[in-house]
Image (cartoon, helix red, strand yellow):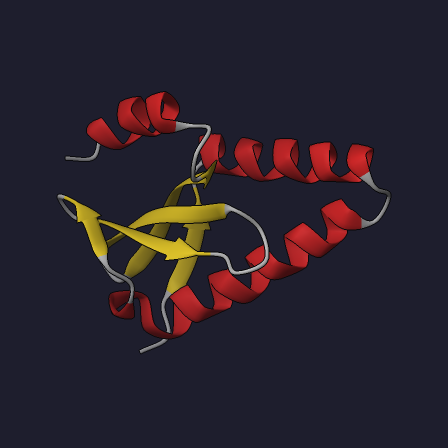
Length: 102
């Protein structure tokens, strides 16, 4: 079942910040990061329930090339992206943001 995917404002800001950081490291790398995120988002849209629940109703979709994941919930047929987060650098951000969803 194809779902609509919606980025919440904090997740959209995460995506833009990370892409800008990667572009500063190497021009064009931010675009590559965004392309991988778009592919992962399309996978979430196609089958959101394939991704594991990590806390409460929050699911996680891991990226392969970059050490990031998207965290999302499925509500009313829509996958809402809560965060785009580095897997080792953002536990406090994730804790606060995801705690609100539980």
